[in-house]
Image (cartoon, rainbow, N blue to C red; front, side):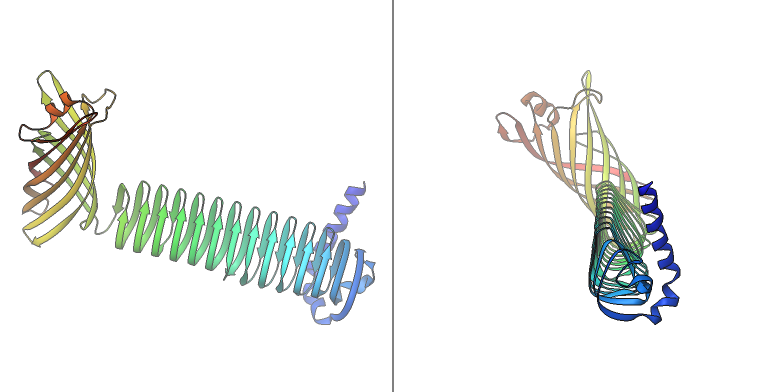
Length: 397
């Protein structure tokens, strides 16, 4: 029964504080000191919502006009108008108007107006208006226009940001300038600055750097996208760096079929931008009763010479073995190649060019099988290392 009465009393304080804010704040006067058990059981009695206090002590919960100095509450501090100075609440601080103060609470800080200063709570900080402050919440921070810092264990939400958002899980903003850092995701409209997320970054227009552990998504990008797996954007004035970068307009996508002295048949897919793309390749070479396979990843750039000619400069790394389904041993072929392209049609070219190859094989016999007869031996100890110059010939679509 006592707990129910306490809860009802606190709920009543919050409700009357919200309803009485506008009608009482202009009638407030200032007093140097007040002590309250639970409003109206205190030195200011029923007049408490109309009085600004320089020093306020609420044993359990107090509802006052405001604070211009210092307020301490065992459970809850509730200010009808503004707070200047410092507030400490065992459970929470609730302010109807603006706050130019430091606020510390075990659970929550809630402000209906603008906030300048500091908010620190075990669970949540809320600022209804413009926030020029540092918000540190154990779970979340919510703000209007933020100019400052939000740090939370789970998430930060702001209408606009000009500063830093750092969260264990995610940050959300309609528009952002500054830095967003999160363990999982950052989501915003237009972004100017840096986004770093453990999994996902999502923006409309990005001017700066996106760094996503798995995925970056944007409409227009001016800057750099770096992802652990995939970048997606409509257009980009900059560079996307990831195993897979999809640029919807102005992107570079090509299929190639080609052969060389190591793998007689290769199929490659290139994706990204003309001046920086990634390459995925599958190679095949029959040998007597067996066959060798290689899976390669590479990066490259295409340099236009004129409308009919261009040059590809690429670096590839193959993982190799007999058959495709066996356990893969320590056999790697690293290749640097230059290809001269002649464009016969808009989506058809033929190419040829030299390559330089370094093979690292786990056994000498396999190195002898893969490397051509003119290869030179670099080392034949625990691993066999061979090098040679080669040649590539193919067609591109």
